[in-house]
Amino acid sequence: MSHTMSPSTQRPYGVVRVCQEWGLSRSTCYQQRTRAKALPATPAKRGPKTSYTDEVLTGHIRQVLAASPFLGEGHRKVWARLRAQGIRTSKPRVLRLMRQANLLAPSRVSRVLGPRIHDGTITTERPNQMWGTDATSTVTVQDGSVTVFIGVDHCTLEGIGIHAAKRATRLEALEPIRQGVRQQFGAVSAGIATGLQVRHDHGSQYMSDDFQTELRFLGVTSRPAFVRAPEGNGVAERFIRTLKEQLLWVRTFQTVEELRLALHDWLRLYHEQWLVERHGFRSPIQVRRDFLATSVAA
Image 1 (cartoon, rainbow, N blue to C red):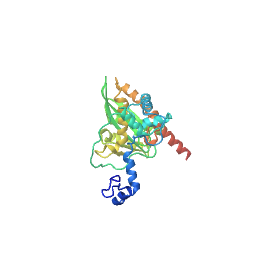
Image 2: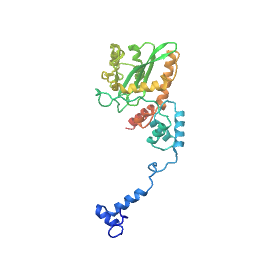
Image 3: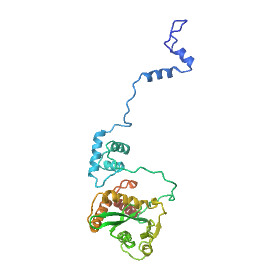
Image 4: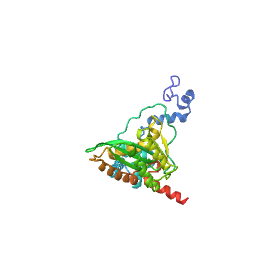
């Protein structure tokens, strides 16, 4: 508009007059003119440039996944393992590269559910304050369907006990609790585990008189989850999911005894090398060791 010739004076209107008529400052006019002539900026990574290109970092991610003893680890644990190797990057970048390379484990589509009965948190601040227990099933070649019972600490996420049995009775369901009591308290005797709470669902094994009587004998307080609220026993449920993904769904077992031995071998590996995000990507056994060291120092 500033270059348009005035019909009366035969001279250009000029930037000053045009800006006065439009109510604009000349700096705004020049800025818009420069922006219109500039080429569109190419998107680039924010922040300082890293020494790893996307291709190189993707290669390191593949090596971490191949070397891990566990299956389907997510981007957070891959990021933690990269940091342990001295490879510094960000979690969003690891997620983006794993998504682009199709390295993320398949996941369920979340559902929109109604209001929850359970509210609050079930994790604890110290070990041996609350244990969770639950059961799942698998199939062996010779013995058919088998039930696997587990127990897990709500603080350290250690598997305090694990057991496989052909018959899913109330007595078999007690075995992980007894294993944990022997390991953590030294013996199975009256009142030995006073102060401990056990979270379980409303299955017939756990609500039976024998199971509840055994808990009272040990000094354990029974804390059943709410009906139709599985998140109330979410620690045990999540432990079982890990057990399925890392062992039960990827191996075939001939007998119950072979499965039982494999469960204990896997549990030792889980304690030593599984990474717990909420504990700073430390293993369950390391979390307990650090807690004991802190308690002794205090």
